[in-house]
Length: 471
Image 1 (cartoon, rainbow, N blue to C red):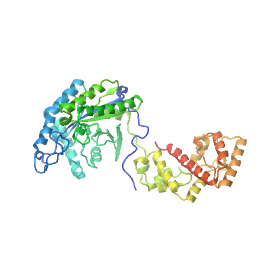
Image 2 (cartoon, rainbow, N blue to C red):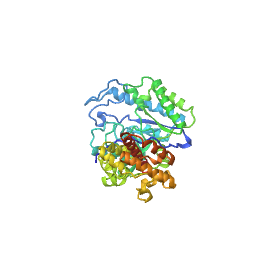
Image 3 (cartoon, one colour):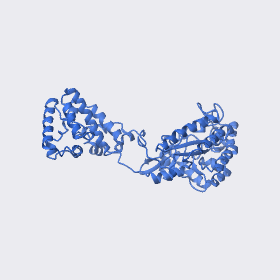
Image 4 (cartoon, rainbow, N blue to C red):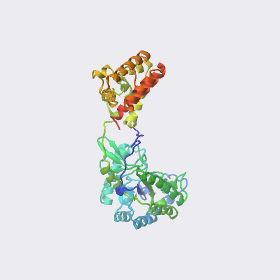
C-alpha cells in the first residue's frame, strides 16, 4: 500500500476542550532541562567535546580533546544556574518538570535531592545528551533500557515521561514500545496532548517547544536580552489565554536550561514573565505528569477503524457505495498516497473525489446515471440503496401527496429526456420545496452546465455520506 505516515490533521478543526482543572484558561508547563554532566565529553567516553547550546559563538566539537571553556559553561548551569532557578520556583510554589539526562543526574546527586524535595517531576532526557540520528535502532533501544535502569537507581523510581531531544526517526516509536511511559514529548506538532497508536499500544504525547525556549539565546536568530525572551513568552501567553477565554484552552510549554536561563540577565526575563502570568486568573502551572493524568482521565483514547490502514477489500466494501453504485472509485482511491489525513470524512472525501474528477467523461456520466430518480419508481418499490432511502426520507420525499408525486414524475421524465441523466441534488441540504424549485430552474440549463452541476452534487452527497461514517 502507498501510505504516507505524517499526520497533518491532528485534532482537526474542532479540537477538544482541554477542560483543565479549576476551569483554567491555560496550562503553563515549565520544563527545566538538566544536561550538565551528560553532554559530549572525553570523560564520558565520547570522541569529541560538546558544541551544542552554549554561549560560545560558533562552537564546534573538538575531536579527541576536552574543551575547557565549554565544560566550564555547562558547570555553571549545575553550580549556579540550577540553584537560582530552584529558589525562584520553590519560593513561588511552582512545580516544574525536569528533563533529566540520566548520566547527568547520576553526577549531580545534590541537585537531584533538591528536585525531589521540591516535588518536581523528574522525567528522562535519555541516557546521554548526544545526537541519536545515526544510532541504529538496536543501540538506541539499548540506551533507552539503560536509561530506565540508571534513572530508577539514581532517583529512586522510574521516569514516567520522556524527551530525548536530539532524537532519531526511531525515538518516538522506541520509547512508546517500552509501554512504561505516561507521556513522551519528542514532538512539536500541537498545542494540546494527543494519543499516538503504536501497534496495539496507545501512547500519550505531550508536544514540546523549541521556540518558547531559552535555547534561542544560543542560536541565530535568537534572543539577545532577557526582555526579548519575556516579550515572546508574554505574546504566546496572551494568545493562548485569549483562546482559553473563548473556550479553546491550550497548553503552553516553556523550555529552560540551567546554563542559559540561569544567567542573571536572561533569568530576569523569565522572572518578569512569571510576574506577568501570575496576575491572571485561571492559570494552571502543572508538571507534565499532571497534564498526562488529566488527559488520560478526561480524554481517553478511542480507536477507530482507519481507512488508511484497511485492506483493499475492506476499503472498497466500506466506501464503495459512497458514490452511488460505483465501487471503482473507492478501488482507485485505495492506490493513492493515503495517510492519517485521509482518516477523516474531509480527507477521505478528497481522495474519492479526486478519482471521480479524474475519470473519463463516460465514467462520470455512468455515475450520474447510477443515481435514482427523486421520488421515482424505485423509491415507490422500495428498491433504493439504504443511503438513498435515508436521504430522500430526510426531505419527506417518501411521503408525497399524489399531486407532488405527479409533479416529480413529470419533471424527472422531462429532465432525463433533455440531459440524458437523472436530476441529482444533495437532498439533505434541502427541503421538499427547495428541491422542487431547483428542479424547475435547472431543467432549463444547457446540458454542459447541468452535467457540471450534477457532478458537484454527486460529490456533496458523497461528503455527507462520509460524515455519517467518519469524524
